[in-house]
Length: 193
Length: 193
DNA sequence: AGCTTTTAGCTAACGCCATTAGCTAGAGGG
DNA sequence: CCCTCTAGCTAATGGCGTTAGCTAAAAGCT
Image (tube, rainbow over all chains, first blue to last red; front, side, top):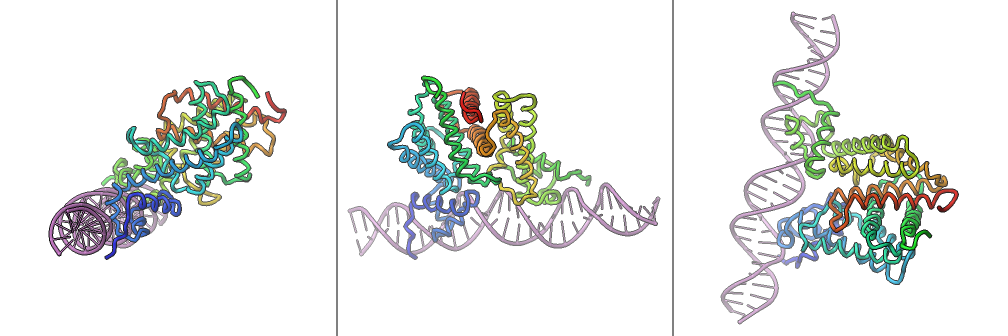
């Protein structure tokens, strides 16, 4: 019987892909094993269990999202940077809904949890956007939270089918970017507009 | 053997309370049955199963949240209405984290789903807030989505422990209200200010 | 009142899932 | 070529949601 040649990285990657296909809630050890051509208990040689698997998928998602946002912001500033970051973030969540869904409600276990590091990187990417708005130092944490809430809220609501009624969703997102831009600009150090 | 005298409403109410205690993910049929002093299969006389139960809890949460927001807005307009609505919404989510968590990722099955009606009521309450900002008609849907994204994102991130670092969370939320107010005002029909 | 119908709650049983224990055989290092 | 290590296996356990079928409490009817 030939070996499958798995390793933790490959298992987590397959789990993330599977989560995107069937939804984070339906990511099951048995289904993942079947996808990998392996029996369920074999997975325990590579990951600690379902909890650990979800955690690793979430860390992967945050890390990838951070890369996407960080890369998109490169070379832009101010409103352009905001738009690029927001679009990159939403794009990532819509392309990888299962992965990202695994992150909601996931608390880092400790300071050395890879999940915490990945979350930090994503926040760092958004912080770069704020630099272009000249927000007073004591307010940047608040602005960061507002920005993250806005992007996270929109992306998760859309990904969950929460926007059913009339207007076009892409258009709404562009409107949201302009809305955030104006809100942030009004908070810049030298005052309004 | 005396009867417990249950009915769908009582079962859902107990489920919602239990979800707030143990978290939405740990709301199990067996645990709920135990809490109600009944064996697990008996619950199926009142609700269709776990899926149906979650759906009803979610509908209850959206309905209650809509009432909270709608009641808080009464008698206010403009920035005061926005602040009242946002605080009421976040307060509800923090008081009932399990209930509200049941709503995320829940799609209405059809147009006559009670969940859809409850969601509509919550949106209606937020629409009342927007009336005070004199947003041009084609933009109100976008503004509504932005507002909902902002509140939903902040509340779920905080409820999930997503805000770990330095700054005070209540302060951040007040900042967020001011941020939203400025963003909305800049979109009012007669222009800036 | 007594009789009938309905139904809330029960026990028993099934299947799926995550997980653990213990075994076996393939791959790499001397 | 043998020894060690370990990836993957089978078997078994326990918890969960769910269904089928029974029983007795309530409710309705005469």
